Every structure is written in C-alpha cells, then in structure tokens.
Length: 114
Image 1 (cartoon, rainbow, N blue to C red):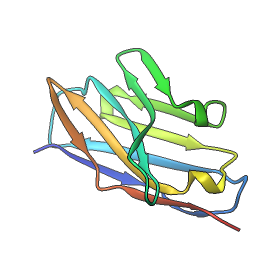
Image 2: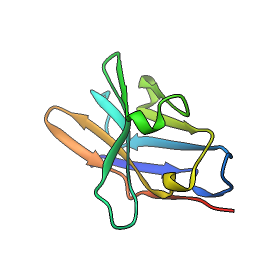
Image 3: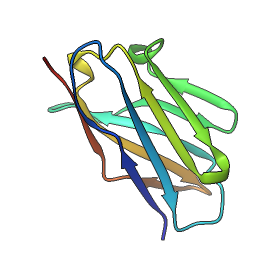
C-alpha cells in the first residue's frame, strides 16, 4: 500500500522560508509524477508545482518564489518556499501518480502570519 508522508509545515512570518518534504513508501516502483497541491480555507484545492517525467509545471502565483525538486531513487519530492505571503497560507498536500493511480498525503499546514 502506497503512502505519502509529508513534513516541514509550520508558522512563518511574511517574507520567510520553509521547506516541505514528501516521501512515498510501500512501493518499489518510481512514480511517474510527484508534486504539491494546496487548499486554503474556503477555496478549492489547487496545483502548486509538479514534476512529470522531466517536465516541471508550477502555478503562476508561486513562480520565482517556490522551487520543486525530486529524488527519483527515493520516490521523494521537496518544495522550497521563499518570500512567503499571507495568501500562501494553506494545507499543502503531496501528490503522486503512477499507472493511472493517484496518491495523496494527509497534508501539512503552512501558516504565513506576523
């Protein structure tokens, strides 16, 4: 059974930085895609950034501030968050996909507030 485990959320002041990490367990196969989504209070879940094969896609709202990276050998994905804004406050979910199956982590809360 594939599980995604996230870590690294927390409270940070505007302009600060955080690093989110996610690792997949329960499989020996490499995921086709790994990335991050987020859901702010009262809003729909939205894509933050994702790596599929060798292609990276990220939301316009985070370009230049967030950086996604993968370790295929470890089935892991990190998200570096810089220049954080209050509107980045959300629960961040790790996402993975392989062979038409998708997997989600339980989410980690990022709160940007002074």
